[in-house]
Length: 262
Image (tube, rainbow, N blue to C red):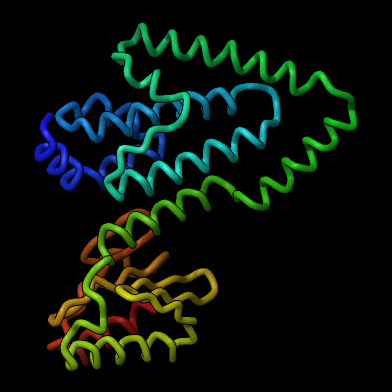
């Protein structure tokens, strides 16, 4: 594939390639999206860590460090894929260069199982005091990393932000558009949201509810609300996020709609 085709592949498929790093969709993308070298590159790497995650889940040992490592690599893979980078995970590139036939996947799984057993034997060869330290670190890891739901929420938020909210810098817009944006942001703050301002989108939080407002141009923008009760009225949904288009020319009507959401 020449450079022009590679660049086109990245631009068209980087969001799908990023989604492979949710791990569970990696084998689906390997089978269904053979038309994209970029998706295959990331999905094959993600598959290795899906296999590792399954091993961690079924083995009768508490392995917080491997859990943290798997999550950290998945997050890093998601971000790098979404930014269009051919990011190679150390020690994994040799595996993904193979054709992932059922025989090869079985071979990879067998090798990972044997290596995991060897690692576990060395980990648990120490004294009971070491086991106590492992349990303590496992508790700390649980507090720092959070549960699977929290990890998925983070990935969903990053996807929404990168895919739908990155737009023009507010300072580059017309005065009318800037006034409309300010009016909506004041409305959100008056609803006791706390604002975290950015150059090209705004984030507001209150309790467990979060609002993201961005993709600005001179005609309007997009608002995403987390855990809204009005999912059926959304223009777009992704995971726990509901998106709503906002048109500045009919701002009073749009503000009434936004008030109903929050």
